[in-house]
Image (cartoon, rainbow, N blue to C red; front, top):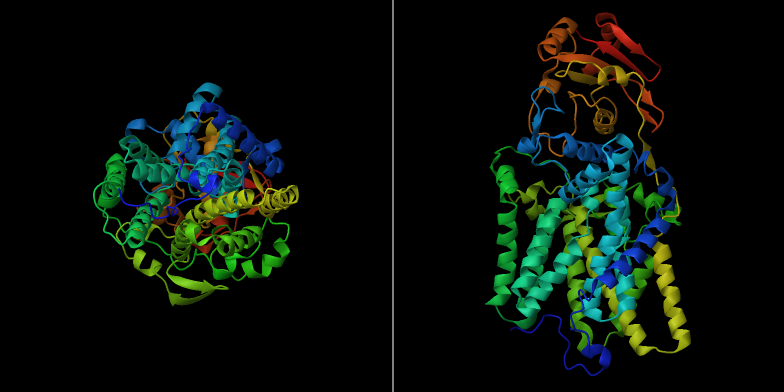
Length: 575
């Protein structure tokens, strides 16, 4: 077996002798204890969300509304034709191979809904619990991974916290269920390394399973973990100055081909669709150099970072890549304090952080929002299928994973060197500051789910096969809102609907807006029975802006009979 790329040379202390001891899973009792501890931390961190878990979606009105629709769709979809629906983009419908499903999460919600019901409040509660569950589970996974390297429970606990409660995870929890589903990533890395170290087929199979679960949680992770496998293999080859052979080559190849085989029913459809779905983002949703140090929007010192965030490309949740001021200081200390014989692990971790940091930077290096020199991401954006991974900043999750190991290692080293009470108290203060540096002091938004009385008219219509046109049609959040209203209120097919990749043209794209008579003919022939005109939704502060592409509002009011009228919405009947 080739030497491990970060193996220590001739360990001379009890701590160093334990550094390679695998302590991944040593009993259900520990797992349960960790789950209770990290669940309590989750509750404390997000205490402000807890009272509304059954009535409001976590996060501001954006893609969280689409994620709520995903949960509902999993309950009502025809299982034999799950990846094609006419519930949105009615009447033609749309394929969903590229959609933002977090498959393990919607399965979790589906199974629990069979036990507790599928009414709207229950789905909201299960949706929010599914989001929050990622925090204790990802912390546990990182704990076992960090402890594998450090043999130190305290360091592993803090490392698990750093990975699970990182600011990017918090931000994506408010926006994207699939991106925030990071809980399987550390388990994959752990079992991948164990498979290499132990030449274990069992660990290899488990690693492939966690790779598949990660990819099914967010298809971006199919590529990020592929990049990790490539990084680890190349690093080992350079470190040992040998070409990987035998088991060292079997493990990475088995992981790649194994997960490809497991996911082939979905991947074949994605690759073989022949539909160009590459869209912009590789030079927009990126990790800015200043973003690594800028305090995120929910931080106690957020006003100090506000001017920086206002200049970053993309939006705030994709731009949040804050590593933590305390973490940076600890990492700096570790680089100077580590002994020469222990530098292999630090070299490995820093190299990993650098590689995935570069990937997170996207096609060009951004400095305070300015696009500068080309980066390797420019090449990645040209690769087949991988070019659809249009949000490079999300690769920051692997940076946090390497950082978590480094922080855990620093704690283990400090505990091994300094056994005096004063030093231990100092270490406790550093750990507390690390927690406070990630703590969300400022308001974390929610999206209230409420239904207008007028939508009950549509819901209670005895006819079963008709669609609903929501206007205005422009606006990303508006499209997501119509999906939420469909799932929570009337549950009828809609002409609108936002998917991760809109890959087909439907009536929504060809609807006449100038000739109202022609429009009426289109709607009647397509069995679109109602038009809902939205003006505002005060529960979430959403204002609908009418677009010229939708035609003249007065024409609708004069051409179609009104069956419901309120300040916030009007419902017109087409036939």
